[in-house]
Amino acid sequence: MKLTLTLSRRGQVVLAEGEMHILGSVVCERCLGAMPLSLRVLLRVGIGESGAVVAACDPELDAVIAANGSLDLQAWLEDEALLALPMVPRCDVWVEGPCSVSNMVPPQVIN
Image 1 (tube, rainbow, N blue to C red):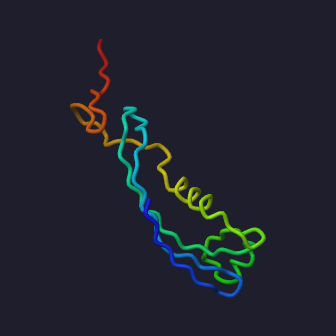
Image 2 (cartoon, helix red, strand yellow):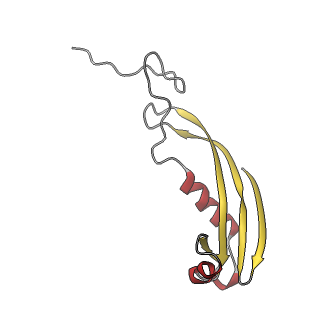
């Protein structure tokens, strides 16, 4: 993972802007093969002690709650990465021939 993050204070809110680049692999739900995954997650959030404080600063910001003025950075970034994952990852749709990811041949109906 590569993270670029800029932090700036706006009153009681810290504005966090940047992006995460994540490289890895997931299992294709179609062929069950390992599928390479490259995610780019844009981050633009307000970090504050409550959603109301963040909304008062800028109602368009997503709020990240820093309870008692403290934020678990790793947990927050893991949540952002999990939210960016595809719900049902699938390799390219098979037209013919073997799957480009797993090299499996599509199932065929035999009468």
